[in-house]
Length: 193
Image (cartoon, rainbow, N blue to C red):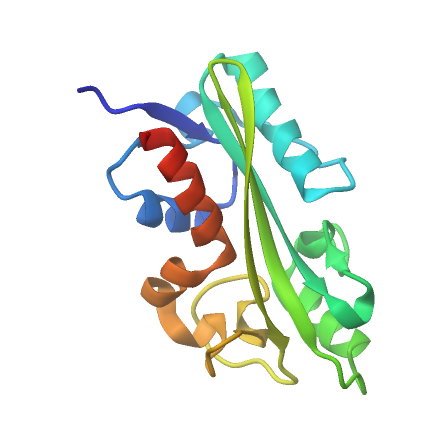
């Protein structure tokens, strides 16, 4: 049986690596580079679902390939769900993780409620049909960064039921319990049924 091929519509090498590790060898995963797509697809929607669909539709319409795309946001209760859809550019358009973390910690100074959740939404387009899959991990934002692995807000997010940040626990454990892992597993189950 031939393995199904899918383009993962992302330019984020960390995401590609993480999803590849979760999917292992269940499907053949192509990057945007693999299909010679160098476009930085604009994420102009005001929801994670909307951004994921924009990216997947772009690949499907222009490259005629089955594909999926994701968008992920960190939603902080005390900030009414911010940074949310703007997580990657919370401190500006440079997509600077350090600056984003600094701004978030500054915005939460003095806040007792530090509850937050990471939410990932995958949009899959297969044979022209669209499907959405969501993964959520609840946790809290700590006051000082800890750990060196992972990316984005990982050094300041501790998932519920754990004492380590995503950045302290290492990729193997994170890839089992993260928001992206949960959404990827739902996607994977769907692809393999």
